Image (cartoon, rainbow, N blue to C red):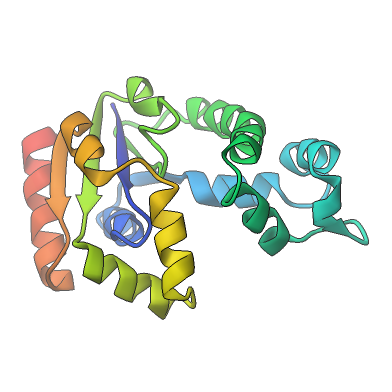
Length: 185
């Protein structure tokens, strides 16, 4: 069984996955795979270098430059996703653990919800999301830009199998995860 964990940036999906790992479950992290694929001479790196050559300085990928381009231009974002998403999905499909949880930030945007048996959406109130993103070093404008680049939460809620509202404490979140696991497994 494959179960996707998704949610807006800052919603707490990484904490959900950290807790699942702590419980002994296998977790595939799409962002981590993306990072690995962008390491020098990996498939993603080589393909991105062909399409976005201005984002490389002395052979090194300037991720801030690439982010600035793709978060400000939808066509450029689609180009990058067209490179990276198939490579990540290929790696995900090679995994055989059961159950396998996968942290998929753009689950619905990428149309990957059909690749999973179930999905769990992690949701937080906007003020909490903005606070968390500012804690990560983004200014309010950058945080809002990133949130606006994703599908609206209201649309994700309509497509979610399970929803975890992460507006409380870490202990509250863990209890909600436990409850969700009891219902799914």
